[in-house]
Image (cartoon, rainbow over all chains, first blue to last red; front, side, top):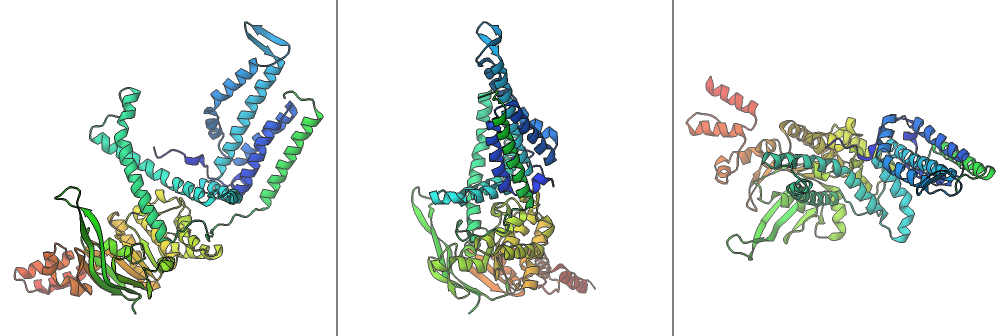
Length: 270
Length: 285
């Protein structure tokens, strides 16, 4: 239970690990837009090549990437299959109501490649950025939202505390389960509904203890002069380095490349 | 004026009456308690569970306010709301359960939490965090997540989080109650070192008599009142009084006391085992 890889962070010292988390998030968003702008195979090739490049740069074992793909492989297959049969134009192959056209094949390939690229590139972000850095970066990036009275600091603080208490509550769940089992609770047999019912004696003590913890934490935070985000400073200030500028430049080159491919070559998909 | 002065503290709350349903009775958790604590002193506050000692700890940093009476910290009245954070900067409180007082999932970021709250410059925070972690001997663990540490280590990180705010006084509310003997030893030696080397005033709330023997002064609480106070020698020599209130004395003190009761000619007042051994050897000669 404790081994749940939270946030799936894979510690390392690669170039991607060293990038500023804010830069990584912005570049990720730019890249996601780029993935959906590909209109022909040349542009798609640029995107796929850069995804492979990012994966290699992250120095994270490939099997972790396969693991994150495994979870969405059905979505990829189903959407690709649907697209395959919804193409317009001259049918290449026909059976009853099903017909496969060249456009259909193209659509299927594009949809599949886009989703896989999306998953891989976002995994690269979570693999190379610790949850703390992510929270921190999100807080700083969302700061302008303060103007719209979005409680950015409070949201970030909640995320920090959640990250801190997840391993603790998992450990506690384990303990309560053992305690209930030693009193004869049966959690492994019976129908699904019976097993869900068997979880109630685990969940109630867990909730009670979570509230108690929350109260004590609030007292401890107040003792340490916590008074919200106002007037608060941070020990670690994020600083953009030459690496961040170089990677941004690379992404700009990619965008130019994809746009050029789209403009100069005929479009294969809409 | 002493660093902390408590004058005639009364704190009460309504409690469910056990004999009658739906009626509340007033319970005096603190009943006319007065004491003072000097700068640089190491005071141990002893007593049973529910005798009001934890309530006192929260009065010392304005987390609770007395129903009547006054608490002054460095001449500031805790009832003055504007001074709450000034007082909490001066008096840090360490709680019993180390798990529930750590906020961040990296040790050094947790230690930085306090200084960040009071708006210290980033460079200065870095310096304070490093110093605080070195003071509790946890510097090598600065990049670890707290859930990978032992209880004693976590409690030391919690103490570092308070030290980083550079308080003049640290109040510890049963900091060792949830720890194993090794963790207890780690925390106790850290506390004593901070008192000795950095001159931080320590108020240690505990129910382990052994932890109180090294204090400069011991205050014994029972049922919301101060039973007795003085140096450890003065307090623990009153074995009958403590026994009558179902309080323990250190094991060695009890041993000597029982020996004397059986007619052995021995001085009852020894607080440490070495001391006791010397006395026993003399008797056995």
